[in-house]
Amino acid sequence: MNHMSNRPNDLSSYWMPYTANRAFKQDPRMIAAADGMFYKSADGRDILDGTAGLWCVNAGHNARRITEAVQKQVAELDYAPSFQFGHPKAFEFANRVADLFPDGMDHVFFTNSGSEAVDSALKIALHYHRMRGDAARTRLIGRERGYHGSGFGGISVGGIVKNRMYYGSLLTGVDHLPHTHDLTLNAFSRGCPEHGAEKADGLIDIATLHDPSTIAAVIVEPMAGSTGVLLPPKGYLKRLRELCDRYGILLIFDEVITAFGRLGANSAADYFGVKPDIITTAKGITNGVVPAGAVIVSNEIYQSAMDNADAPIELFHGFTYSGHPLAAAAGLASLDTYAQDDLFERAAALAPYWEEAIHSLKDAPNVIDIRNLGLVGAIELEPRAGAAAARGTEAMIKAWERGVMIRVTGDIIALSPPLIIEKSQIDQIFGTLSSVLDSIA
Image (cartoon, rainbow, N blue to C red):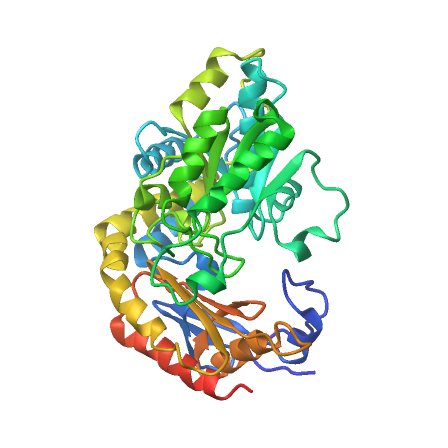
């Protein structure tokens, strides 16, 4: 039994999410504290946070305004129901969130996570068509390699095999667009790749197969994050928007990762100049401090629900913790922090330096692709023969031992640091990774 401080003496009860539990419990990577750009490991080492936690800590750790707002809030109003009652901060938070998203998207439905935001968005899309008398539109279209959280709706439209294969028939009436990843044509692109806009035309095939009148919505990540950072080819999202318009299909952008500054803009919708009908968010909305998510919908969708309601309650959907007082307080303080410290602009300004730094690893051993956009990066490694994901896992462990937290999906290293990162810390990430990759067979 190890009775070291900061470490529980028995790790067996906690069934960890998306984790190799047996391997972890043999050799745990324990985090004891965090401040600014750094985690503190249980053995007292500084670990540079190269992933903003899990894509969420955009303003860095222990951001004073957010911490104080949550501390104050918990003493004032710990919990209030949001079914048939309200509290002021939830309304203020909704207004502030809506201000950051494209014109004409002024309504916000609160959830507790990206997974819940996705399931909510899919339900809102189905509800919209049904209430307008277009009840045949029930099909939901996702994309291969898409990640939309862990709910049954999200894994149904999602396209990551391991997230889907164990859980039965999932939602019926779902189809998938082809993914856009093309190493032959696009390897080592800087920013969005040149080739692949025509992949959006997969929607024509799906619409021809099922008839467009049966399709409710298409959901895509503008930039696919968790699958290993797959960037949209130039013109791809615009083409998808045009096709959805042609067929009367709602377009949902899953911006759980991309909203709130990750690309150096309020949202990917802003960054790419393509406006969807619904946007899902979470993660950066509260800087990761209190779990929260939100669905931002077009005024037309909201108004349609109000106008076509068949009961006093217009949408039979919600969560005990929708618009939770602590989440609202953390969210308001996060949005204040982003604005007052110009963090989105900072991310945009650092993006070229980040691009140069990550592409400096082009000739490192086993690197077959490097991708970047905003303050996001991916380094794809050649899988070891007969041992997919082994190289990636080894890279993650060695980077941790050398004081940098990275994230891996199979053999793809994903990076998304807090937006407060300094150039010297960008150098540290890639200097460390250079030595890590040199040390891996």
